Length: 357
Image (cartoon, rainbow, N blue to C red; front, side, top):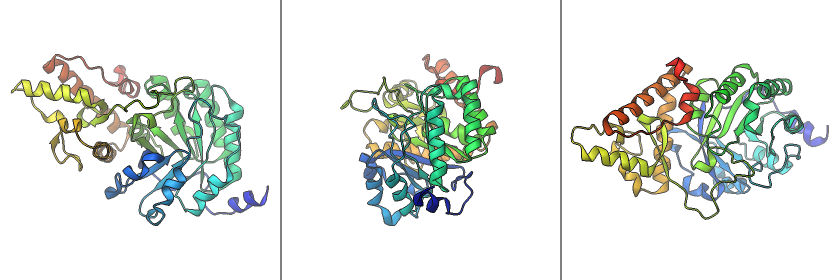
């Protein structure tokens, strides 16, 4: 053990636990950190700044870091030329986070591919050497949540006794299948160190309900999952699709579809408009057709506020199942009243299969 490792290991604290408990954070890219910096600040929501310039972006607000949880995720694991998890951590990345006194120090891990046990072990062993207060970022191929993969994952996490933050890979939604959700729930039940999620979406609320320490929900769709190396996402320069959470439907929905639903309500006097009216702190009971013209930061503030409200309501696996069941009822109402068949997001059936309704 060299001097760097010895000094880090000497810090106090339980290596198993995360200093954050049951916390919701919003994840933003470093190049838009200034725009979204105060997102959720009024009610203490944390923020994760992502990308190679994340430390620099956070340093502009060094005098505000004690006001709420702030973390940095280098996202070294993303992109077509991502390094393997066997790649060594960058010492300055960890040291600078310590100097800034960030509540959770995140490793700049490489990617852990399908059945790549050497990459998994390399990340965890380096995290142990880095010392207390460090959380191992585990960017995982989806197969790690399947039966054989998750058993080995649990074994290695428990053996190394360091908190971990998962980043799950998928072209759209890594928690849209029952086997993936089953694997995540099993991991949350059996892992002794704290388990958290980066780059997630509404399933993060379910993860918190099932025992995750903290979750970071992406402000943009590109930060709500990890694109596979051979499917890097929309071409550079493509205008991002705007999504807003419809609280009643428990869904990130394209703004264009929200406008379609609102238009149906306006065409029929006997249809209630409650579904398209939002009482979050950003919207103030305005109707959601405003998303067609509102600024990106206002749309993001709506999503953050709705997530915060949802976290207060969903405090257990039972209340999470109830929230999904209620949303499915609204989808059925849309079919009955609008004669529109809108498929609910697949994560709903993954967390609450038909056999359990």
